[in-house]
Length: 68
View 1 (tube, rainbow, N blue to C red):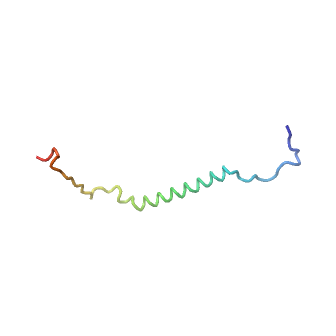
View 2 (cartoon, rainbow, N blue to C red; view 1 turned 90 degrees about the horizontal axis):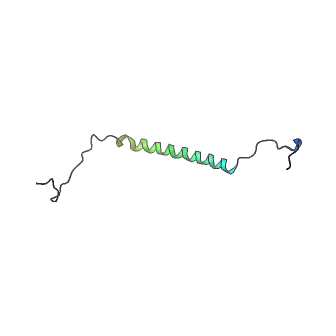
View 3 (cartoon, one colour; view 1 turned 135 degrees about the vertical axis):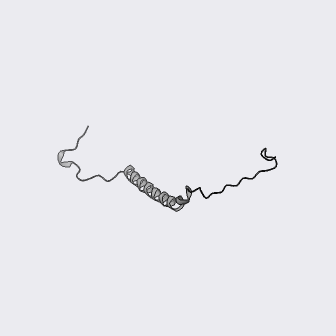
């Protein structure tokens, strides 16, 4: 087993690994996706829960048991 002598020790920070870069990119893209979904919710959301003006219609056919 070999060890580095104290005067040959690496100095400074190591570059980020591939997995660290992938983690940061995934976090960035998830943040972009959350912002985009929030924008879509604000675009379509105000009318989504307002159902008091909805007037559903029912169509009865002659085969329906409710028609007398």
